[in-house]
Image 1 (tube, rainbow, N blue to C red):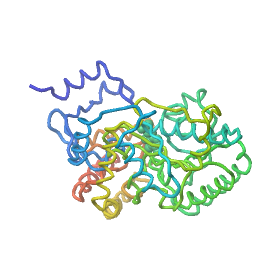
Image 2: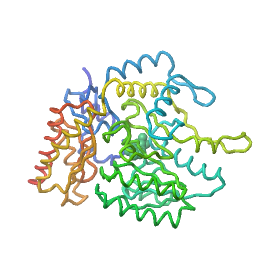
Image 3: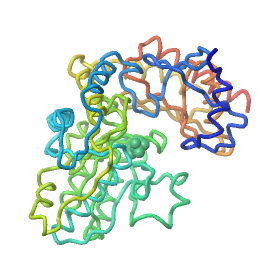
Image 4: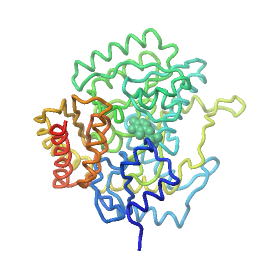
Length: 437
Ligand SMILES: *Cc1c(COP(=O)(O)O)cnc(C)c1O
């Protein structure tokens, strides 16, 4: 006899402290133990299935237990599971770095391996600050957008602006400043936000090392979206004022927005790009900071000039993770993923239309393979998101709303019929909410 869901949950709660969770919630909210996954589906210990509508926290691109990625990781594991990347190298890291350099926009020619999203942001911030220092300038301040999210380690949290995560730790944070994100997807909103950015840069650029942005979509900030014109303007202004532009594509990278990278919508090339999440197709933790030869050269000197970037993590560039990433990129090469995504996005957009008729829906938004429905008229204490989450699970769909925003970010292999089912459950959940209240 295997374990059932409840026994597994009890065993878990004895010892595991879960991320992003008030553990007391689990006195009443069941924890879902997952036994296996296949394609877009997750299966619990009692055989119930759940459509993974959030790609397991935005990481999965081509489904769970993807046959190609499985095969590639299995073959690597018998060859080399890990080796340090200082003084040593290995084939998967080399091949992956070349692929990333070839596929990312513009002048990003150097790849610095890290092992998760937040750490990539930390490394990018440190590199930017350190670059200016190596050039003889002290620039202790970072600029970011209101409502942004860049991870939850101290540096990454500092440049974020989601108060739920940030407020408590305020006294610990590094120097940061926020400028307004465009309020919506219009060109006018982009223009207005750019004029504030210009004012701030005019006044403070001497102190600012970098502007960090989530291009086009602010994920954890409730799938807030803005026009690519903002990126065009931000690139121009940061260049003009000698401030780096860090594009945090940890969520938007690898086809999520309808192009391989969100920066391509604006045809810009940042000074740094951080990538993680979809990089390994949702298999293993891995991240990179990509940067330019110009940045790289500012650190290149005799050892005793002390300009080297001495940042490292034990699992930097893990070979299994690099192979999972290579296998993921092979799928992009073999199949016309971006083109298929554009077709699926159009279908998502079409199915999103009917949500606008619900009286408790304030707005719907969509960009590529991300669609969002924002509700209005609820207090945060009502925990509407939690109600939708429960309703989804009872009906076989894993939705994980961000406050009042219900969103869909499924693996790319989802079919139209599965999109229908996923969205129907959300629709009914939102409709019933209205009746209940
Ligand atoms: C998820 C995310 C991060 C943090 O990545 P982790 O691997 O969760 O630390 C950083 N930036 C963005 C835009 C993200 O969506």
